Amino acid sequence: MTLIQTYLFRQIALPVLAACASLAGIGILSQSLDQLEVIVERGQSVWIMVKLTLLAVPLLFSVILPIGLFVGALIALTRLQREQELTAAYASGMTRWQMIAPGAWLAAGVAAVMLLTNVVVQPWAQRTAREQAFAIRTDLAALLVEEGRFVQGPNGLTVYVQQIEQNGLLKNLFIYIQNGDKVTTWDAAEARFGRVDGQPVLTMKQGSWQQYSPAGVLQQLVFDGYVFPLGPYVTDDQRIRYKSADLWITQLFKPTPELIRDTAPRGELLAEAHSRLSSPLYALTAMAMALTAILGGAFSRTGYTARIAKASGAFLLVRVVGYAVVAASAWNGWLNVFQYLLPIAATVVALRLVFRALKPHRASRPTLSRLKVRPA
Image (cartoon, rainbow, N blue to C red; front, side):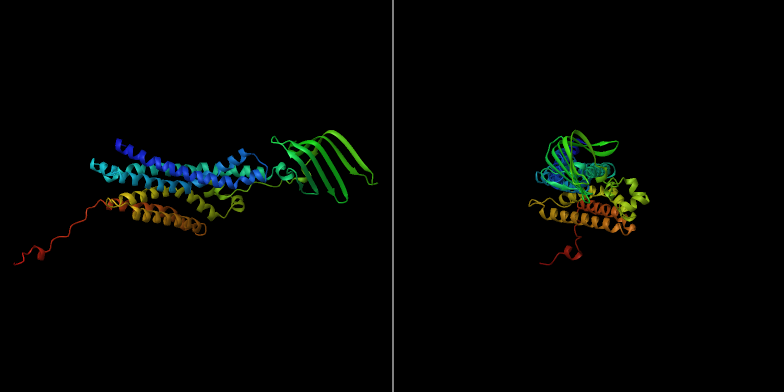
């Protein structure tokens, strides 16, 4: 790029970066509010909440980046046109293509980032988040204990813990097990969850065991340490169930029968795959429509509100129709081609309007009657 094009690229890129960062911040805030349940109800740390929040951001990139690109480009181009910097660039001899080349390069870069995110980063982030959520959901400490409350588990198990420290240490533990008419109780000053030979256990210290004998005599045992097996009270048949957004692109195009059974039908998986590959094209559409709003007409001293409103409405319509095409493609596979044709057609139409604005209007030829000299 030339020096002027580098300047234009920088002037457009900074507002685009700010707009994308603002939208990403809103997305992170909304995701963090959704993840508060991890701390409040599951007893997890703040780091787990932050991790789950950040892992959800790549999924939002296909929505955030085109909108941020459109908004940022409109802000930058409006300022450049208002301060007549674009007019000065035209006066220096730059062609229309040379003027829009910085924006085109920026849109291509955003599209490349979106493609990389959709193909590599998003499935990795979603799978990691799904695995973390599964670990939280099957966490024994989160399932069987809650500070200051009696928690009922499976097979007649009831657990009470007075205090749960940050390092996972349980203080003043009480366990009540009812098996028919047989009742057994345990209490311990300290306890901690763990695993022995792959099986979940609860290691208790400084506690006692109580149980009535068949003769009705209370039996009691005091111990310094005891390993309580939790296998009978925990089901290990649970497994992670991935969704279509969690799968790699190769799995979407060539799903196994197990994936189709556990995630979604083949048509929905193909629609997701084509959506990931076609959504970066909307970055080109966003930049083309932003250029059309500012450069697709004559200079206006009164502003470009009407043209910006039309471009915004057109971009919103194209994006909504794109989502509708993705949903329809899950049931009609031949519609997948329109996931690519729609943003490409919108980009071509917008660029045609930009270049058509350069063509000078032909003055109407004077008719013979106008050339005739009227008698005085």
